[in-house]
Image (spheres, rainbow, N blue to C red):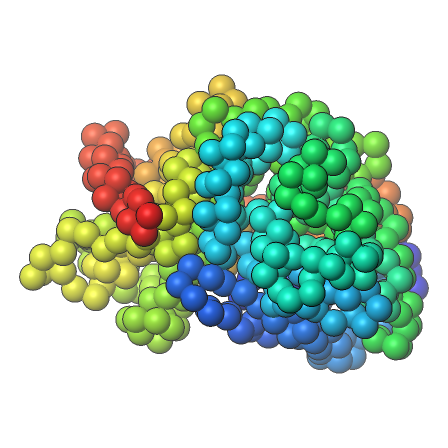
Length: 499
């Protein structure tokens, strides 16, 4: 570790907030700042963000985190960036101005486009090359939509005036004063434009979607030299050394460095990843094949299950239906009743992800009787995260022929003791909660530290492991099966609602 630069700064740009966390050499949090991000719902099923708000809020929290603890920017050895994946920004390379809102990963506006492409047989091409399903979740059709629906965008792109990026690329470009247009393997692998076997942007897909290749960023390793920040922002130049999509960041932060190790992150969505090592396993059960964080000479793949609405269901309880005043209230309400009184909530607010992949599914609250109370509905909402995770774990075991012995967990909702115990109960597996729940940002910090020699080897990082909390399953098999069966009945009833 450099004695003169004792800290790593992690930029964590998420779906609902922009955060900055500063870590020391032990992996402990020294300072943190966060700002919520406005959600834009122009039409039902559409979700977007203001790219300028993303940039401004992210820079703001970086400065706040430094000022809070009187940390000099010169004490930062490197910056690691982790981000909401798939969300799409297009901007003018000359002015730096976005041509449209950042279309969020949750947005379903291109579902019909994906259906048409699927009907053309293009889904098989996409899966073979990118490891992904042909779905509006990913960046490709969002980018296509901007080119086709924003006035002048197509002509400007073909003239070489527009740049495309996921959120990491947008931040890198701004932080470096427009000098660097780059992304990493993990983010590139989520665009539906990147061939994960040839490690290159795929010309066939670009041609099919009408996307000029000149818009696309350079792809680098997750731990690599990305360039220096412009000193106008923090008063000094700081190397950007790590870039990683949020879920792969958490996989790395959880130290799932070997094949067969898996984690689930309970954030806005829930994302379960299993490291499959050097092998890219093609899924037959609705999972995605994606790239894990890359560093040194190590290129790894992962299987991923994507749950679109995880912790966001708690935000919905708080903000939209106002059943709770604070997110933390959900645990106390869930524990105030013995069960859900037969109530099930399937939070398919933006469709269903793994293993169903139904963009037309919509949320359903079922099993209501006169005896159903607010507490029962809140408990059903919390339990929905565990049931959705069960579906992904089962698909992952079927695909990989690996039976998990334990599920590592992290993310904001993992602080909910009731949820973690119920997750263990419904899986029939131990659930191991990370002592450091900010594993996404920690993974970005580790990757940045590796690139600048702050950490010399993976062994140095493994030496920082802390004792985790384990939740052991308690349900009898018959009870577990009964609850899961009713959950699946509820899921069936919400499918295809908006078709």
